Structures are given as C-alpha cells and as structure tokens.
Image (cartoon, rainbow, N blue to C red; front, top):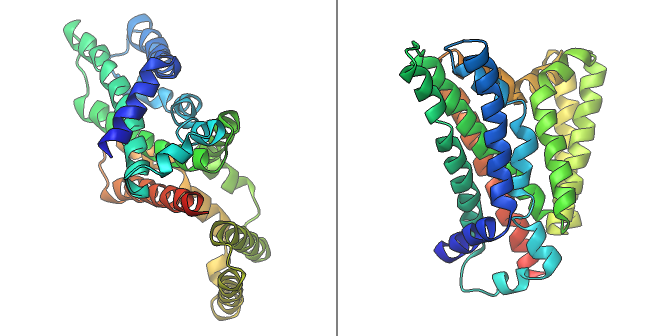
Length: 288
C-alpha cells in the first residue's frame, strides 16, 4: 500500500493537478474569509466554512477524477494490477493519497481563524471546530464516492462531470424530496425503479444472471408484501429517504456545535461503503 500511496502522491505534485486543486480550495476559502471576516467584520469563521461546503463539491472531483480513470485510459492499470499488492491495498493507497492532499489543504486554512483571534476577535470555538469536523467528514465521503466513480470509467472528464452531478444531488436531495409527491403509489414506483437499478448494477458487477434474478424477485416480493402488510411505510417515504441522504441537514448540526454520533457514523459508513464498492469494482477488472 505504501508504494501505491507514494506513487499517487508523486502524481499529484509532479503534475499540475494537485496544485490546481489546492489553489481552487484556497481561493474559495480566501474569498469567503475576506468577504465575511475582513470586509464585513464578522468574527464567526464558521460562516466561511458553512458557505464553502456549497462550493467544494466542484473542487473535490478534481482530486478524485484521475485516481483510476487515468490508469484505465493510459493502460497503466495492467502494471498496477500485476504488482505484488492486493486490490484493497491499491484502493486504500489511492484513497489515503487523495485524503492527504485534502488534509493539507484544510490545514492551510487554519491560519485564517487564527488571524481573527490575533486581531482581537472572540471566536466561537465550538462552532468553528464543529464546522471543521463536518467539512472534513464530508471531504472523506466525497473522496470515497469520487474514487468509485473514477473506477467506473476510463475517462477522467466523465468522472469529473458525474462526480459533480452526484455531489450536487446529495446537496439538494432534501429540497428535491419536498417537491416530489408524497403518495404511496409514487413511493412504490420509486422503490421498483431503485430495485431495477440495483439489479442492473449487480449484474454489471458480477455477470451472474441467476444471482441478479434472485435479488430482483426477493426485492420485488418485499416491496409488494410491505405494501399489503404495512402500507403506511410508503407515506412520504421518498422525501424521508432523500432527507436522510442529505449532507446539508447533518452539516447544520455540526455548524451549531452539536456533535451527533449518528451523523459521524453516517459519513464514515458511507465512506467505507464506497471504498468497499471500489475494491469490488477493481477486483472484477483485475481478474477479467
């Protein structure tokens, strides 16, 4: 894993990608720091972090788009796959390299709130720390998701565009849920569509039509059974699900200085899930 990690770190800083990403992030942070804290005179740096989260979704894909897509495009993945390391080590090496670059970028912003203290401002430490924790957990999650998307294509630009679309959807999911119908019929239809997408993804991943069929039959049976046994479950189910998936809902609690274990578990679990999915995706490519 160490060799993969060092290779990936070199690729970030021997090309312009790492510098472009860090520059983009620091420009975003610097703009809001100047606007809120220096120009407007607010001492609460958490306002900067709150506003930054709505823009970093455009910067994070720059960090992840080439992790696997570039290897597949240039055919250097064959050298990587024949190396004496496991697929998990390959994925984790790349993941931790991207996480290191993100961590460096976040640390470079720490002098900004310290500047407020140096100028005599009374910094609400609990809110700032909470906002930083939320930003970092969100960054970890975005890296894991972006890495998986990169592993699904051999075109870094496609990975970039799809990652931005997915991150944006996660940001506005709660708002979308409020606009969608809350009827039982709509909820059942959405469950069937999600099940169909799951079956398609499963088949594409394992190429086993029998396993995919069994999952499809069991899933459909579960949806129908639940409809007749406890129909109330489907009332507003789409809105509840999208609200649960919303990143902004959880971030607002951290922003207020409220540390909820369930929110931390959500980010960590989602990150682990997509790292696992990436391992499975690369394992399939490695032995196909």
